[in-house]
Length: 263
Image (cartoon, rainbow, N blue to C red; front, side, top):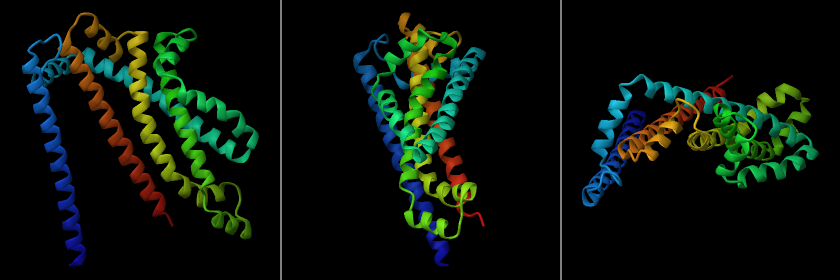
């Protein structure tokens, strides 16, 4: 009976949270619509209804979905590469102080350098088709590396001592201790890096202008002063970003639940 009441209270809490979020979104949509009507200049600002109508028109075309898929695929390649490389480098840095010291200035530079500078530099070395891949990797790598390394360094020393006592080494130590201790840090890293990689990748496309990408459509909308298109493609970027973050968060939550429930 108590468990049933707790589940009911939890459900009511989630409903209230979503209701508050919906009200906040509607509030800002109303503000947006009122601002568009007050300015009354489509070249400067268009209302949300017009933007949604234009997005619906774009979504009915094959070019729209091809551009979404191409941009998403390239950013995903760079992002996944950054996650794998970041975990490997963090593991090495946790074991070898020389690696940690060598990587410290590099990771600091990657975090501090503006995205635009990286885009211009990378364009000197790779074609515009691969630009968003490299930029997504550069943006995500220091986040994954730093968080995973911190998770390893914060691992409970008592658990490690217990492993020494019972001679638990190698993969067993990683599986039984490090994975559980580092997983929350890894989850935070991949979630944060995902949004940053996606936004940086699209910004790189706006500068590099690879064919049939979101960045190219954003640039064309700016050049031709097509404000509805500019807002519609921007809204598409936001929707994809929110959907990706929700998907990754759910997958990571499921993975953590399965890991913690393992025998």
